[in-house]
Amino acid sequence: MEAAVLSGLVLALALALPSVALENGLARTPPMGWMSWERFRCNVDCQADPRNCISEQLFFEMADRLAEDGWRELGYEYINLDDCWAAKQRDAAGQLVPDPKRFPRGIKALADYVHARGLKLGIYGDLGIFTCGGYPGTMLENVKQDAQTFAAWGVDMLKLDGCYSSAEEQAKGYPEMARALNATGRPIVYSCSWPAYQGGLPPKVNYTILAEICNLWRNYDDIEDSWDSVLSIVDWFFTNQDVLQPAAGPGHWNDPDMLIIGNFGLSYEQSRSQMALWTVMAAPLLMSTDLRTISPGAKEILQNRLMIQINQDPLGIQGRRIVKEKYDIEVFVRPLAQAASALVFFSRRTDMPFRYTTSLAKLHFPEDAVYEVQDVYVGKIIGDLKAADNFSVVINPSGVVMWYLRRTALPVQPWHVVRQQAPGGGYRPALL
Ligand code: GLA
Image 1 (cartoon, rainbow, N blue to C red):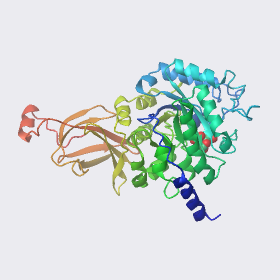
Image 2 (cartoon, protein in one colour):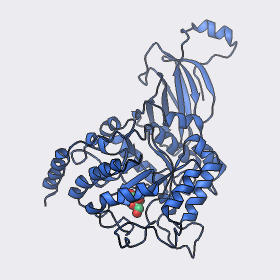
Image 3 (cartoon, rainbow, N blue to C red):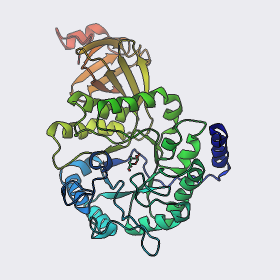
Image 4 (cartoon, rainbow, N blue to C red):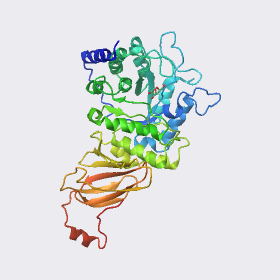
């Protein structure tokens, strides 16, 4: 079939479906937790690599780390199995079963272990003949049964991938799984890879429908352990922000894929950039790294309280890129509750730290407003920054400066009063 005809058909199918209005009350803020895929992939050789293979042991150990190393308290509550957990065949009753050697106690026992530590369990399935890794998929006729199996095991989140299925099967299967999950009565966050398999953009992808079906969705390519990969994702998401940004909100999020901070591909500056840019995108914070051996530097980035507060802002408004300078500096803004906002100054430069001078007025903040600014990574606070004031930030190559801004209730003080209060100080330009 011609591609155009096919996409028309898919669209018609999607539009013909009754709205299932997911509104399951879940994921009111972007989900946070840990997911096995990017770091541990489909390593099933437990004989050669018992510590890193996809086995219940790996998940028990990561659950311990989430519970004991301060992650859970910060909101990192999901621990998610990705591909390659299943046995190669369904059982005699047609039910999915975990690999008996690698998950001898079964998924229910894993869920119990995770729940006992105040965490939640996510699982992976694939709408299609096989998962992307070649394990049994969920065909249309398996949708109900698999939803019931996951619920009976005590699963709290499902990532439903889309390898080995047609566009027509996806247009039918993704909404069907939403209905099947709701019908189990168990609250299960539903992550759909559907748009990623349809190019991520209209007319093939209808984000209005998607938001009624799924709590989050993968729009684009898989993240890999490299800065190039992070940049390609950032480029795609912000190039298409006019389509993607309005689609996100409480209960329904764009998912630019896992955080790779703590692995091998990103420098310190690049790790800070991924965290800041994912936060400005209101993205799920699903880490994929070895929490048993993570460095203090990576941990500090992932455990930054103000960053997490911004990511989890109750308004759930996704941010936008508002400036793209010819000289490789970009500025992003995310509006937050209580008239606060987050600004990210990002450098794509590869030469040296760059001094960027601008003003809040130039960044479209209201002319007469005054702000208290906190540097999200450095912690430093600037008292009263007027929208008209010029300020400079120094941004490292492939790094960010991130600001949290609150409008101050104080009336604007004339310049000489500020001078009297801080003799010799002055705050223009503010340099962080
Ligand atoms: C796809 C998904 C990845 C991961 C793998 C597993 O590529 O996009 O996130 O789940 O499948 O095989």
